[in-house]
Image (cartoon, rainbow, N blue to C red):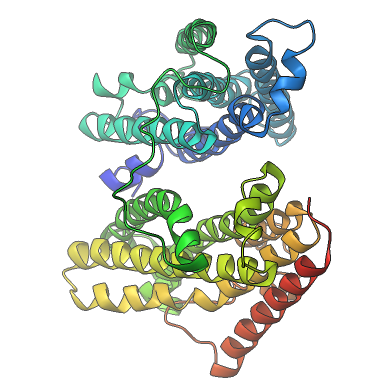
Length: 467
């Protein structure tokens, strides 16, 4: 199944050597996921300590002392490099303790964090080009998405990596070929690219004004359509993020849905897969895949709600709250807009999975059936939005992100680590399945729980002091 085009897009190249060894399978199936995760961490960290500090005015305090113009950028890059070094070390120790080869494990982990460091420098360049931190973050995330796509298409053309694959730094890490045919020279390319991009960021920063970008801002649009109401403002603020998440979830769902045919073909000769499909049918597979997509969507919901607090910290929320808008209305409108976005994301995810599975299996009915199945996760999103509102009220965004981490850990590692069933069942995403087997009462409990949390968060937000 891992040789199917969709599987190659979602994992890594197949080198045709020891493909069923545990080390080779680990590198093939997990490197891309870890690269994307650590790269997002690096991008957000660099933008936060460079462009975002300029937006908040915090950078002025640093530059008023005896420091160089590029000091903040290089400090952010040193921080990211240090974090990635710690990640590489701890991942290597963890895998080596589990019995993997130390040298191959170190190469795999260095490849992952090497790519992450490269995208940290990409973020540093983007922070010099665009004046807004959100634009810089979006540009860097867009480059990451293009790199993932180019690597995937290149490896589909030739399963061991084509010429197109090498246009993506992600392929350089995977082409180190840990546990198969280890080679170190692709890692040197990552180091060289990171150094070049860091130097480019320094040059760009020296040629721009403070609190300005190299690329000129487009300015106001006097003929733009007016924004109607606070809820409409939240929708506009979330529009770019929603488009990016929607495209990503749709493409991921389309690819995973197309694996249905490969799974059924494997079942012909694989007794274990036959038994799994005999007990759960294809719906068991769809449930697992849809839960993964929904877990990712919880990050969007939390980010959209917690944005109220980040805007409060940066002062961007003051112009709204200075008018005839209550904090109660401001926060609950953010929750409502986040849920509208969540509904769009899960419908796109369900439609993408249904389209992929329907084409692969020749079952058009799977398209509308799985699209509706995606909408079934909306009550779970209500709970996550409510947790986000409580996090805003308590000035503790980490609470909301801890809830996202719990959803992901319980979904991915709960059965492996043998968590108690009540712990796994505490995740609202883990309780939702395809087809939906929850009673109306259970769905009502989710909705009411989320609503109570949202109202409690709005009440707390209304009573506390501003950031």
